Amino acid sequence: MTLKTSPLAHSESELPPEFGVVVDLSSYKDGVFDPISMSDEDFKELENLLYTHSLVLWRGVTLNPEQQFVLTNRFDLTSKSYGHGTETSGLQAKSILHPDLKTLPGQPQVQLIGNGQVIDEAVAPGLKPLPVLKHPQHKTFHQTVISDEDEKKGYTRFYRWHIDAALYELNPPKVTTLQALRVPQGSPQICRYDDGTGDELKVPLGTTAFVSGKKMFEILPPALKSLAVRTKVQYSPHPYVWMSQAKAKCTGLGIENEGKELPKDQLPAFEESKIKIFPVLWKNPVTRELHLEVHPCGAEKLHVEPIPVTKDKTRDPDALYPDGATISDLGVVRDLLYKLQRPGIAPSLVYAHDWKEKDLCLFHNRGVLHSVVGAFTPDQHRAFWQCNIAATDEPEGPDANEVKRYA
Image (cartoon, rainbow, N blue to C red):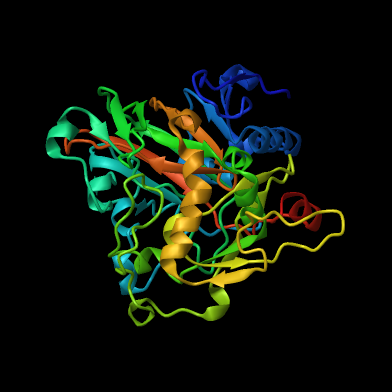
């Protein structure tokens, strides 16, 4: 089978031209996409499509929770655990993720997310009583907030730029699937960066915003490329509890440095061996290109390797940490990561998806960053199923030749 695809519409952006494709349902027998019956050959085609284009979209699709899990799981068959694991410690109730997710009992890798009172049992199978969903928005997480007056005018912000990942004990999922079950209609909003740049972006109500990690790396100046290719990020144990009292930057890209992180003795029990250290750059398994992939909110330390000594290359006088370093000052860690990532969320580099009911989105979680955007009123009912699975392997970083090339 050859999938019939068309490009995602992002004509006004500067995203990579290959970013995002839409699969035509006529590609499938009787126009029905069933991941359970997908052959190995057909999956291989889909896998190559995803890793080449970062995001694959189907419109007019209805999958049950098992089908959505099977589709997600196909990218890492030996793993079965939800990307954030199964939290049993009472302290995990402090996690900033805790209010936003409702696990489907019959398929625990699939989470119900959205806004408002669920009134349809089909949206929340096995959940009794039917839950009230809470759409995360910036006023609960940012250090500064948009005024009520401006919010009524339609202004909003990115909530939190992130990768779907536990960042402790478990490895980042390779892919995430999002299925739109109920989508409220409303006027577009203006997403403001509020960082002094004047940057803003018109977005559909309740959009999910995506940026390319590949592009984020490509546009950096040489000194920052050198830093990125030589650096690994150490994440805090139980980072979503650790950051639970802290507040985010106005762009949603990382945490303000106010010293509000919980001390280690107030976190759930942790083991040093389960603390995660990942490279800043992750290698695409198909294209072999490098994607800048950091969850800035959870980062605690940076480990920078020295610039390799070569006879045919003189050291750049502007190089950062040419002799290597371990950086544990949170303010410095956050400033450096912001310099690496902020250029990559410029308005022209953001794909803001306009959700329709029965949209199914599959994205390369190790190749993009994404963010919730916008705010709903309590009576606006929205329901999505989200699925991602902790990977069996860690992301692959740059090889020695790539380090020499960029360092």
